[in-house]
Image (cartoon, rainbow, N blue to C red; front, side, top):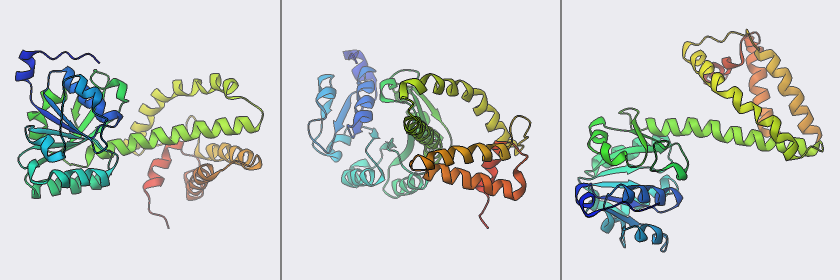
Length: 300
């Protein structure tokens, strides 16, 4: 990524510290540098700051040193445990600053982090980055923020350097909840495709042979996503196009085929058990989307 900083933008843009230089942390730092923000970087493992330094970043020896001259701090590390360790290491140096935690955490972790931030005198926004590293710094990057609206507004211009920034609510856990839901869809979809490849292989079908037919499924998703979202919000699940009972029958023969070929059917069995439970509860004539209500219902 080219460094578009100039002497004029360097002094007019807010200073930022980026803590954590994994692939996403590096992408965030480079986007900020490209937009002209003086950027200080720190990483627990030495040597990962070379690219950022080549684009004009300043390296810090500790989290506390990194945030010393930065009113805005972006934290992007592996998990909640690592995030807490970095925040604790920065300690009193964070007082009065705004910390954006772009680490993937649970909604409850995000809320706990916000409570802790208030107790220690700094502001906290939780951020969920919903797009790959290669999009960061471009409009197609989507970054969701939750926490105090006035805190988000105060740094909106800086956030624009990262991509399309949206504030999704005052509840500190809301961005993490969006993140969890989207990752739920992503990983179950990826797992489903990998399982399909294994099933095809067991039947003597190569991945290259299956791929053209698998490509047709994503074309069905956009209208299905909108339709099911509406059904979920209205709790209305007509079985006009397909029913839960027919879905149970389809899942049963796929699960049987996979099991007889010696494949792990853990996920398929779970889906089939849930579907059959809903059918037994009287939802067989309803549409498949009725499972969203059944999933939320307490088990007897």
